[in-house]
Length: 185
Image (tube, rainbow, N blue to C red):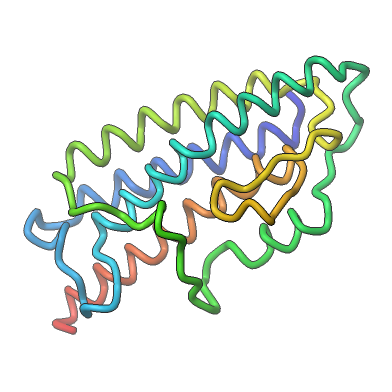
């Protein structure tokens, strides 16, 4: 696999390991507890990530199909486009500013920790499979439309780099929730 895609794969793996560590250290009753009524619980953070992955997987698959049709040699170096770079840059932790998500990505009533973690792991496998399928394709030449906002478009490589960064953003958020709950806040 291309080294840049391998780096993305490592980010997906690190996100899953981070979630497993978090879930293993979290008392069950804290899973759904919010530190403040205006903020998400750990369960809601994970549910949001699952909703995001479910929305992006068909977009990625369609982008991979277009990239196969375009064909040609893969670039020696993949590049994010300006919109993708900006989203990638602002997406990661530590979170410097909060952004309201669109209605379709608001987490539903919290589910069990086990169910959410299993769904996350399953979706990680599917995203990793898509990443392996992307190897050798002209990802920078395919533009996708963000499921979050149809006005936002960026290339497929940008998309693949944004997804694990988005995961780390919300796992960081979930870790802050756990810290607040432990400190009694």
